[in-house]
Amino acid sequence: MHPLILFASGRGSNVQAVIDYFSKEQKAFVALIVCNNPEAGVLEIASRHQIPVQLIDRKSFKEEAFVEVLKQYKPSLLVLAGFLWKVPESVVASFSGKIINIHPALLPKYGGKGMYGMHVHNAVVAANEKESGITIHFVNEHYDEGATIVQAQCKLLPEDSPEHLAEKIHKLEHYFFPRTIEFLLKEINIDID
Ligand SMILES: Nc1nc2c(c(=O)[nH]1)N[C@@H](CN(C=O)c1ccc(C(=O)N[C@@H](CCC(=O)O)C(=O)O)cc1)CN2
Ligand SMILES: NCC(=O)N[C@@H]1O[C@H](COP(=O)([O-])[O-])[C@@H](O)[C@H]1O
Image 1 (cartoon, protein in one colour):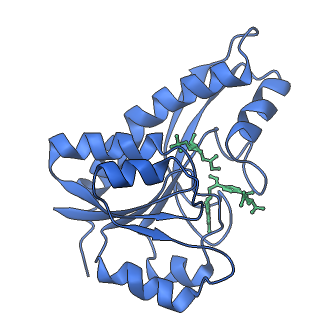
Image 2 (cartoon, helix red, strand yellow; image 1 turned 180 degrees about the horizontal axis):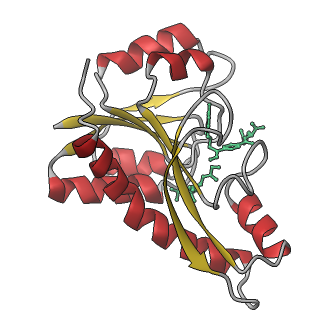
């Protein structure tokens, strides 16, 4: 089974979707959850499923030691699921081609610094867009500029609030993210080197 390391800063509904999917599919498992927010809801999910947590903070964070911790798990993929830090270049380089992220918009629009969570949905609704969606992409050293793996769209109605759009986006995310992970593990035959 492929070990996954998930990174999250918030509620963790995508982490839960990945846990649920692979509890049935048995091809992968969440070996570690990395979080930078001691109040994050994802920590309750980790506790409920007895998944180890690496809680990080900017004051004590040491890139080299962090990379060594991650390597111990021999992860097949590092999966960013609502993680709000920029992953350092040293981590990107150490796991080249093995880090993916889910973004709640159709990149390249509505991406980059400051574009996370409700900020994205507020901007999309304010721009009167007729559609939105999700982008699952490989991670490089810049925000949201890695190669796109999958995009999925949803219609945006004039009466849709940012909160309603967020609900539509989460439905897409919870369906496509686990299946995209499974696809990557199967098709690209990502293995532990
Ligand atoms: N090296 C990379 N790291 C991360 C990527 C990436 O593509 N490359 N994606 C982000 C996730 N993300 C969008 O998908 C994203 C997350 C956060 C931000 C942002 O502006 N963050 C703020 C800090 C917010 C906070 O700490 O509360 C900031 O940098 O000022 C933009 C995009 C995950 N990491
Ligand atoms: N730019 C990064 C970003 O905005 N990521 C978004 O954070 C949310 C986390 O929700 P969750 O904690 O319920 O999975 C998700 O919608 C994800 O796309």
